[in-house]
Length: 116
Length: 118
Image (cartoon, rainbow over all chains, first blue to last red; front, side):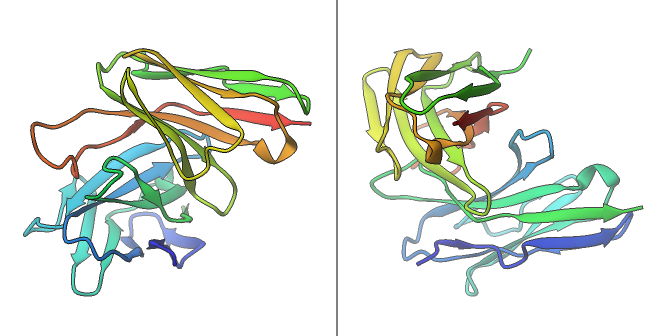
């Protein structure tokens, strides 16, 4: 079974508007961390934001926020005021507390295109 | 200068050849990882190392080997390259945060190596 599911292969958003990228996860471990990474066309993987399973508040980093709904097992990324430079692939990832602490499990990614 | 560097950035090789991908980091992190990325499959873990004496297989280690020469260096080898090893390869590093579970530790990625096996 997929541990991380990103159901949107591609998304379009108008510049300056907000966009939500979906991520659902599957784990029976009560302790886990959720991450979002950005991969522009140049290929590098850029860390954006982190949410811990015990965190009481949703994580925010500048224009990025994570809409964490634990009961629904979802960790959606919200980008406010989209910019042309936000066009990229976005990956959701999870780390569980278990035998292989440190191992990140990635979703398949969502390609975001920002229109001028 | 980049904190995590990978060499080469691009490589074309032939089936059966042995090749090595190198990763160096200046972040002082103990933990290092090798991932491969294939279109539509996200990133998958090949090997990881929590310190110089600790090396572990990831989910797709067959056909690969690694060497942790020092805290700052972690190399990935393809002993006999085959076409389905054509992919984008990433090295990543992270540091242990205190005595906790490490759930919150962030992995920082190198720029990637594009490998084509003909």
